[in-house]
Amino acid sequence: MTETMRAIIQNELGGPEVLHPATVDKPAPGIGEVLVRVRAAGVNPADAMNRQTGVFSGTPPFILGWDVSGVVEATGPGVTLFAPGDEVFGLLPFPGGAGAYAEFVVAPTRALALKPDALSHVQAAALPLAGLTAWQALVDTAAVGQGTRVLITGAAGGVGHLAVQIAAARGAHVIALTSGANADLVRSFGASDVVDYQATDFSEAFSDLDVVFDVVGGDYPLRALKTLRAGGTLVSTLPQSIGAAAAAARELGIRVAGLFVESDRLGLTALAELAAEHRLVPLIAATYPLDDAATAHATKHGPGKVVLVGD
Image (tube, rainbow, N blue to C red):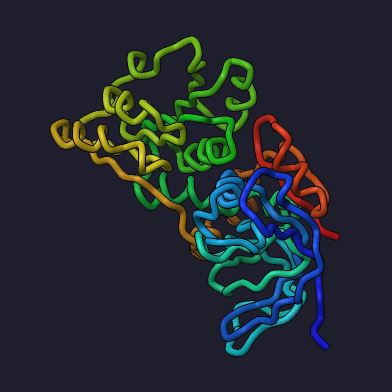
């Protein structure tokens, strides 16, 4: 007899109301995979985008969720990295491997890392997609390190607040753009300078920067070019917004890169190490029981990450 589990599924594209609890078949791990009992699942803008458009998963039905933290329940053939009982967290293969809004999920071992004791499952579930986005932009792409002058937009957001902490931990001079209301919060993440984007035009206030990391899009990439030195780097999480900036950047000797996050065990391990040293702490905006996923999607939240909590 097939085992079952609770999951949040959607049978059609649309608003938060299409998300509903259901009983579905429990998955089984294949070669190189583990079955994880989900303790917490992060909620990301990509989830809402997929819910509305199916851009990543295609035609419903499907189960949302890429961020996961939980306990290994069983291992498939050939698994050597983990054993039942291990606490793990990670990013399910993005963009094709969602499914964390459930009691159990199957994941490739290389998409996971051991959860640091310093983080709860809720905190760990808030980290993978946003944290890896920031790590891959700042470290892998822009090589931010000691003394790098880096400007980060959206610094109180899900990606931004982690980016500030990562850059600060690597010894960078961090200039953080946020609203005035969030200035003290962002400063507590390690920003050297905090700028109210509503009161100050960052493109006129700074120059000769090494790196700009943009998560806002719109005209920000083009404006950011005015702040960068020749040989500097602009990294955007919205590749569709960098067309005009890329053309102008070539004449200025500035590198422009558009980034889509990838599952990355090495990056996860680096994030876990920072968390273990208490130099990287995800901010939790709100938590909801798994069955209340629709409410989590429908509710406007403050800074930080939203997380669904399992049993």
